[in-house]
Image (cartoon, rainbow, N blue to C red; front, side, top):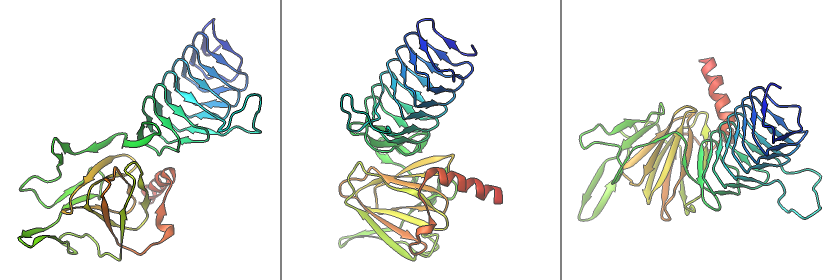
Length: 316
């Protein structure tokens, strides 16, 4: 054999990749397909209609049922639970089980539960004990029951003990992000006995002439907005009340900003993936856009976004 199977394992499948290791008391049914260099630990059960990619680790006590696919470099922690039937009954079987896909590079923590028919995005991280009831976007970190997005993998956050820090006292009013083209802008501020005032003008503060605005408010704190890129549209975001977090992503680099003041504006240029989340209960997000609404300007799927980036790079 080109793979290792412990003498106390039961491996009935003929489709096992080179250098895969299957340890004691694991049981692999005949229809399962397992890639190369995987590590299948003790007491793992793998059913028939299962596809497991290369370099996958499945820790002890996991059952991988019909309809589950684990792509390359996935990690599944001990006693994580997959499900494939939303309404199970004893001795009653659906014509086809729901399909669950765990995309490349994702990790599932110990004792997490994945409901049937979901997609766990590339490089996502499922916290230990989380109960995942909805699809998880690429790179998202989710925790809790029901699971909610708490952060994003590999994102840079500029924070200190007092909250966000974007500008030193004497710094220029514009700071560049690690994501090319994205900038944070310090807006003018005036205050007297009559109240406070902030504004922005095209040129000194706004990098484009707005053609549209919209407001985002009354967002439940655990909900996520955005999750798309624009082909041509520029946006300028100001949280005029409360706070929210904005993640920007160019397919390689990610940075997260906390918008918690009407004196901070965030410019997001075209072809940058943007996400808004962690809304406070009183958050009011004001967004200026460089164009009117055009449905075909949106890229709403992260994989499509990565493909579009490659095409633009090849054409440039």
